[in-house]
Amino acid sequence: MCRDSFDVIILAGGRSSRFGTDKCEFEIDGKTMLRRISEKFESPIIVTDKPRPVEGIHVIDSHKSGPLKAIEMGLEYVKEKRVFVTGCDFPFLSPKLVQNLCSKPEEVATTMYDGKIQPLLSCYSTNFLRSSIRRSRSLREIVYKAPSVYIAGYMEVYMWDPSLLTLLNVNRVSDLRDVKKSYWQTSICSNT
Image (tube, rainbow, N blue to C red; front, side, top):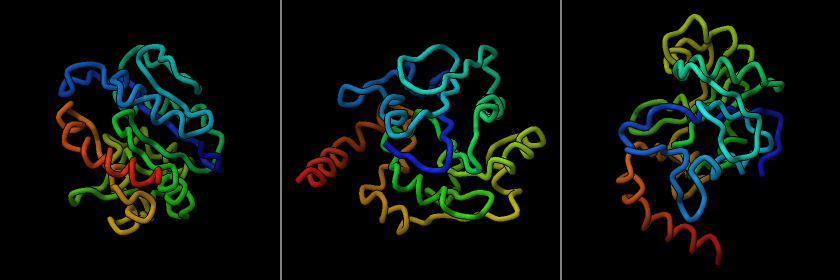
């Protein structure tokens, strides 16, 4: 479990329309995708559209008002100067990478995948995120408007997660099938 001087907001709502079922409740190796992430952090702030059977601070977004409003609701519970924001669809998230990103002094420390920044795999200055969220249309816009941004490239992500599965955003069941072999090989190798 990750214990550091940052808070974590996990977005666990949404329609999961491309996935076909509630992806937060989808099980991988006997654990839901949400549990796989939430167990990695002490008292994560889980913003959800319904109660979920995981430990953490639950914030219920009964209006299903979208990711920015959900993050804004979660920010009310953030006590630390840094906050990592992610979604339940990153089931292989590396706590070591999160610690590394949250140790950076920039307003935003993020990752890049396929040439695109990943705003839901990013650590933010809490003050910067609070002051920007109401004036923005998307989390990506917040990242682009930040006065300083740190971007972790593949080699840096690889240092903290040699499988690079941290970067996998699961939008479809087929995304999991594509990585199953790689995941099992990584799990077996890391347990020897």
